Image 1 (cartoon, rainbow, N blue to C red):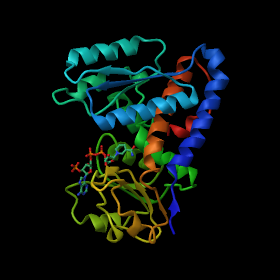
Image 2 (image 1 turned 120 degrees about the horizontal axis):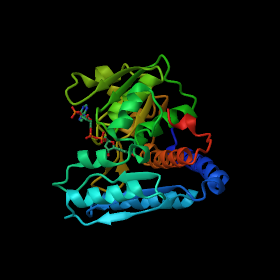
Image 3 (image 1 turned 135 degrees about the horizontal axis):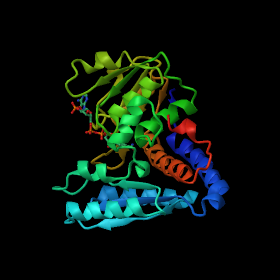
Image 4 (image 1 turned 180 degrees about the vertical axis):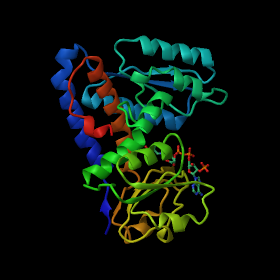
Length: 293
Ligand code: NDP
């Protein structure tokens, strides 16, 4: 039976660390950390994600500054909201909830976020910092995956890692982080020929293809560590990932569940980026460096 990479349990543990960090430094900073989630339009999934993020903030003592613009907001209005949050002294982290309504280009809007307040780690400058191994906020989902591996003593050094997916949100930063941890990394994508032959080479396999249950028993080798980033609502109800969990479980060494794997860790890393930015602004030492690799 595969080891379960329990992101939910790890997220809970890390929330306690963050809460302790906030409690010990709040009097020095004179205020709690602040996270602003900017939502545009009425995408129902986004509403759930934003509410989960606000609940997580409340659990650990981060102040939420929610901001919700209507679906017909113009780019200038969204930009104005971002600039106001950039200037707001109470805000350490800003997140622009994606996807934006049709007609709004996310690129210039993400670029307008102060890179020091970039809670999602998606700003061009911060992706560049990741590429160069410089400190900065890290992309939440891949940083969460790295924390899950580390918590189980799974060291990527020298291992063959395969990342399925090359998005800027997940696949690309994931590959950079695994490479920084000294794995030998292959990135597969929709044009990859004979995907199963590639993924069977993996000792660590991270799947972020956004295709429900795309990978099955044929795609893995015995002993592989599999992290399933995908999350999909089944038409008949319930959630599934990008892999056929029931098929993989008897073969692989470890598998992250969906739900309860990568999802909770993504939210936690958002909090990590915010709390670290808060510490930096107030020149407070912290012990969270192991989480922002
Ligand atoms: P994107 O759609 O942006 O990227 C998907 C990637 O997978 C692309 O690079 C694409 O290749 C590749 N791909 C698609 N089909 C195939 C295929 N048949 N074979 C090989 N590669 C393929 O998705 P994201 O990276 O944003 O997200 C991926 C998944 O992770 C989604 O299910 C999303 O919901 C989930 N997710 C979960 C999070 C969490 O917290 N749990 C957070 C973020 C995302 P190409 O570039 O060639 O098109």
